[in-house]
Length: 368
Image (cartoon, rainbow, N blue to C red; front, side, top):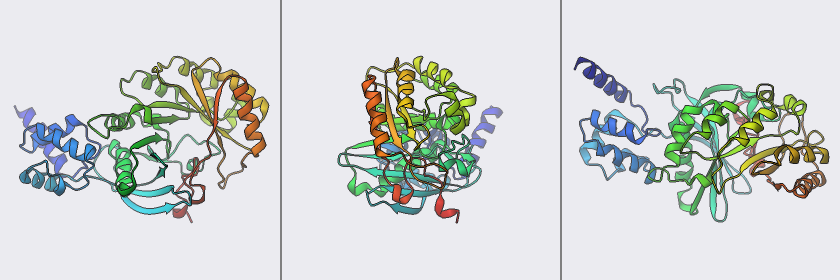
């Protein structure tokens, strides 16, 4: 009995710290409701208000009785990030600079400032989400690497980016939302928080994003890929390849020294693809470095026995010693892959004029 009382007291103390509701699972919210002296089904109502209805204010959660709203207001907060700045591109893309306040929640002991990108299209919107503040992987062609790793984001901070982006654009939303974990950070080096967030994002009673419309991009953390393969709820997988041999990849992606191409591709071969699914290989084309026809032939050979597609991404300018590839070399690379029987597409990044494109997220305005 004393043990149960101490656990209840600890739980109430946690609530009294005003920890954020965003990122809490259905079970956690049920437990929270009970700890506040309410029936557990109130937790399911909170879950629906937060994620399905995307309600950002406790006082407007009208499915809850007034007394429950009062208790929540006194003991918790929704926990959405603050929009510090919006940078809107000529193509409609918005780069958000978001700030999360410090809290007692595990992984969030100090404030964090990160970037999220919202890309509107004719029939959908895509939200590019960060999973860490900064990044430790240190890919040489990526500006985010210059930040280093500051801290992991919590599940609530990951989910909160989506909710803020959708809320800020609520009047112009299209029927379909895509979520890509391709912002700051390496998702598989923040595995637990990322998966907790994804279970909410992909839950039909949560944010209700289809697994077909959610993608996790990794630099090639093989143990993380192997763990992801065992998950019953998971997004699509994208691998940041960016080179056609180990020597080339070692030089621009230090993680390759730990998980070389052969080991990475073995993990991809063992990955249990769903009937509708392909592994996506992302290949950043660096002008004069990895963009030759010979490189394309080697890439085609590497991925030829996989159910895969290759997205070719011309390098986006930044203060790094690389250059974008010539248009002729891009097309020659793509054509070579196609001739070898490989599905290949050129993906030009949006938002380059506001530093919102792939590899450009480095909070440049805060580093002057």
